[in-house]
Image 1 (cartoon, rainbow, N blue to C red):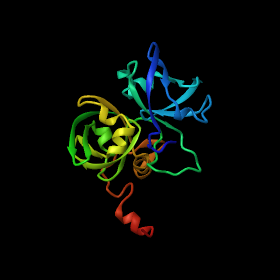
Image 2: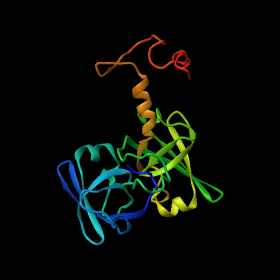
Image 3: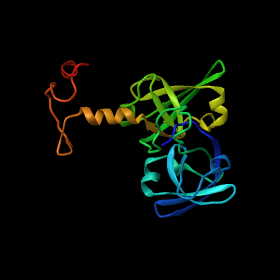
Length: 221
């Protein structure tokens, strides 16, 4: 589990591809403090397991599903990445609940300056946009950000100078892909309120099925 508060920006030192799988070697310093083999580090929002370490780098294995679902396929030697260690239970929770399990990718549409902040608009497909709500949370390349505006096929966030300096988001260009993770709470709520039978969603035109205002009132809400 992560919070979306980036600890440092690392860089790709090596990428060893084997079929659809990739072994990554990433230069880092801060996230190595207290880290041991088997621990989790989020790389651009993707939860990866540390398989080897040196004093200034760590290795992690990205399987085929990770390469398909994320923007990792665009990685090159020297590519900058956002890094965050798994959260400690006794630490402050500064961002939002981030699992490190990417839902898909979006594409940066444009950057626009406003005062000392920068608006970033990102386009995404319907399965992602379904869970994007104004003033809700989303993780972009592992960065916890607040959604400020939403259209049918895009959303915008406003990035303050500190976030711009401490992460890679403002170093990208329009057309670049970014990893997106929706707020996991929304997905759990949908799963619970949709009527299911034997593990399968039930298709029905009956508005009384699932969660309704009537049912909430009947149960004291």
